[in-house]
Image (cartoon, rainbow over all chains, first blue to last red; front, side):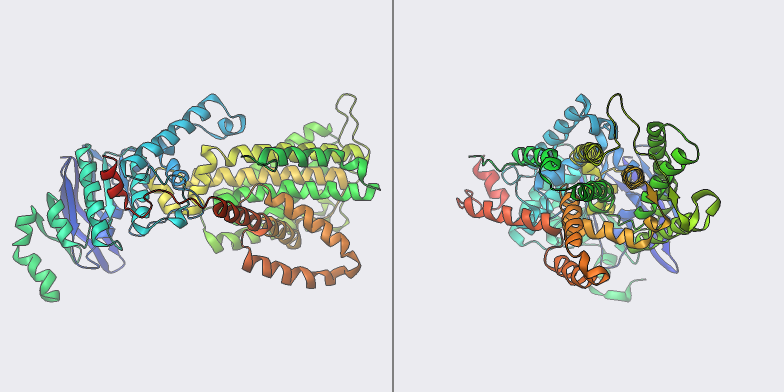
Length: 254
Length: 337
């Protein structure tokens, strides 16, 4: 098992946002989590990436229990993520935004900063090179010196991908990567995700655009009211009774 | 084409200007005024690390400034310690108190952080004001010695103190410049931008926020120590909230989150308020609306306004459109094979 959750549960007061979810993410594939609004998809991401401690259950990554690790330690293990809303630093360039993404792989401290040590210079270059590498990967090598305020929504999404990639992850969680971009651009982002997988990464995404998910994902989990109602390949999901009910029949599902 | 007004030349120009300043001003009073402005520059630059680059607006820094001033005052007057040993100890004391306050204060965020630190600042003021046995209470502390000689360099004249303070200011600015433009500085900016995002890219936010907090109190302490030895009399009012708001005004008018902002803000306001001295307290009637207008129209102060004017001018100059800009990156990829 690569990354799996066991009986993962999160309660906010009386609300059960995620209920008893067992899920395993398959290495080197595109995994997707779908479900109606408020089904607990983002909470599920937050539990895995260490933003919320789960009420119950475990998250296991490559055999180690990472349930109680803080988010920044989880990032160091090679688990990266993006957010629904891309919060980049608008007054800085694309390159500046992405450079700090590699910070977790560097050691230099205050002393290095004040005395401009060799280590700082080397690591600064290392961060810059990494940023250029991942920006080239996402296809933004020509706009590295543009201000974030002056680039399109789709380019911002790509910068957010680049930032997540700059941390040298093995697995990358994408929270609604194609929200707010037009169909053509969605196609481009889908290609990019495929490219990540071809490169050897594991991808797990939350997405509302069904067409995209069905075409792209190799494994899908469906959440509804915090519970897993189905898991399987796109074809299995398409024909699953419970899923059709959840999407079309609204609250009829229990 | 590089203009002669580039960054390096302007820095050299201003450093030279500050070096010859004592030779061109008509009297010692102006020199003394500039010395105090420089002292404020150190404190405001320190505050800028925290408020400007890390995004945590602390309102306790007049308190740390006062801790610096009183530590130096007490160590030299009451303990009769060597001045420079006392100076170094002072920096240690303020940083340590910064560490202790930071450990608790940084558990809060945004306006809660501002309110909490405002209270800490006021408590520091109260302790200084009421603990008469130690601080002399409202009577203050008098007879603080001027900085001790270093070799044959004496610091008993207005001129020599000006150069001493100038030295510390330039040193502080160099250190802050290097921190801000290093990976550590990038980490601070990432925290200011979004703490959540910073955590996902593996930044230990608490550790870095604490570092920024301690650094800012270190510079507040240095500033306080210099203030005590230049003014040579300190009272509890230096820890008062109004001093905090002075610091904040220097920072906002100059330009928060810029290296030169604190320099511009402190020097401009110290001089302007000097020119408006005849208005006494009524000068706040001018400062109030002015500050409001700056915050509304130039949220990043004088320096911020200058920077945006410059970038706009550069954008106009560079009218040549970038090739294929209208294409989406995917198309570009395809075209480039």
